[in-house]
Length: 64
Image (cartoon, rainbow, N blue to C red; front, side, top):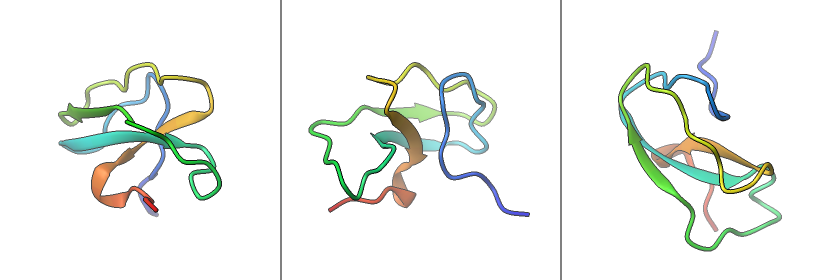
């Protein structure tokens, strides 16, 4: 069973690392200056800039 790759507010970080917010449909909508955060395993994800965004681990983010 694989690890989730998209996280929402209140979920716990599965691993230490840098996370960034992306649009829920990132391929179709670009985000200027997305938030970047560093979380340790077990810390909770903060609020997103808006409800259409989710957190992803930076090295897994889809960027165009």
